[in-house]
Image 1 (cartoon, rainbow over the protein chains, first blue to last red):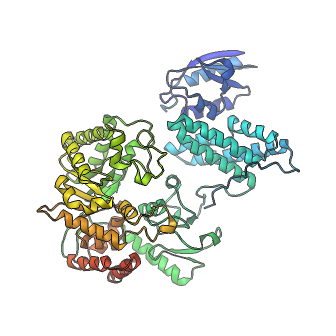
Image 2 (cartoon, one colour; image 1 turned 180 degrees about the horizontal axis):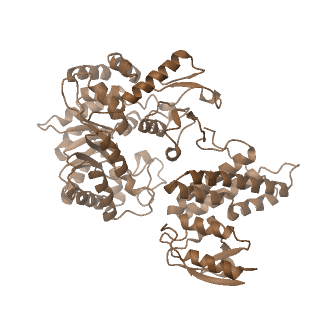
Image 3 (cartoon, rainbow over the protein chains, first blue to last red; image 1 turned 30 degrees about the vertical axis):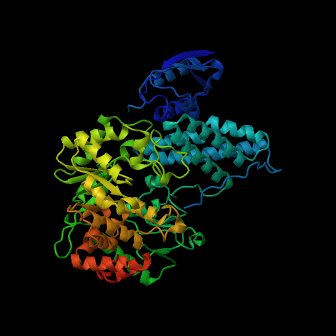
Length: 92
Length: 541
């Protein structure tokens, strides 16, 4: 099990356009990735490829989230997703 | 336009020939088809609607939505019912999160309807996509449909529901499209049939002949020549009636100024507030109002303070559980329940006005009593706004206009609500369309009383009209005859109103107004006046 933390950089938080971009990026991976707020227990983690889950997570700008994944290439995958979350995706 | 998708019956089971696995596969396939279609539309869109469509496309095959539906299918529920229930619970979750998320609940319900349509093999809901321009036929249009309605593709609107002041009618007037609302026999029309729509007569004809084709060509010619307004509203004998524009933001204001508007008769300030969870700051409001003021340097801009409630709910201001929102806390009355919002808005308007050369007037919506008018005028003066006025939408304000105008500097008649409240008929109900006409002699009489009050007691204060009535070129003549000083309308209507007004003298307009007021009913009022205005035929109006 790989695990990485990321701080949400998008000003609007992880919804709207940033959530679309992130969910689409997770959806293209061949492994399953979960996401949870740092303050929530691991068993409450949600499917990170689901835009509806991301929206219900309600992560705001500055919140820390935990990404978890298993399998081949999990570390590389999480590293790229962390970069994505730590970019202001709404600024484009 | 396709009918809305009906709810699959509660408890609908898989038919005996379909296994849960097969139904799950069908559902996944349908969701992928819907996703592909929404992605395709997102690529064609731009700006805000592009990102909304991108997010909606992701929702269509979202694991959360689909997994919950698959669980139901495994227990024997039909695929249609399963996605319906799953969509409902996701939408409810989003709704409970409030704010931006709550607005996305509608997108989930739209996706759900599209998947059910795909599973049933019927056309998806919403405005159809077509390469050819077409006549749009629907039960009724929602405000949201405006966003996706392409005026270059839609030739005319026909709806079976809705009255003359329903959203469809308002959209049609804003876009300058012929429209027939509350039309009979719409259900029998088939997709692709050729129809002739006469918006002026309110009629619809299937399989038109040569006579109708000639009429369409003539109308296109007139519509093109009518698209220009010369910038001065006047009767034939030179009695000036400034034609002002109704605008909902800076973009509208720039367009209206370019179309020759002599000012703004109604700035709807809701544009700053809608789709927000919290009140905009004073600074944000100042920037927004400046955008409008700067489009009209040296000209009059009448700002209506926030008109929330009824058909324009705002999460931080209005209570959506009121049993009767039209008669509830709306317009000026929200100052009772959320004091402070109006005061801050007036400060923002005054700040924006100071920095611009526009002549800024302010008015409050839904004023019913003289005391309310006095309180509002006092608030305006404290904020530094010198010309406070009120809207006359409630019959009591029309009856008491003389006293109200000892407190306020002007009144503006909101004919849509004035009609709805005078006739006690919901604006959105097609069945009550006849009651809901501003041609009702009772409504015209209230306008007459308002003007009488404005010119009595030694004062002579201006009376404007900013409701849809001012955009009807025939009714505009009557309003001028009744003594109304300015007419404010959607910018597109100014050329037609200006042309007809220029064909009559003030005295003639007064005679026509008497014909209308003394009519037995709204149809007779309209028919009488139309018959006396030969220019209507010439202009094809």
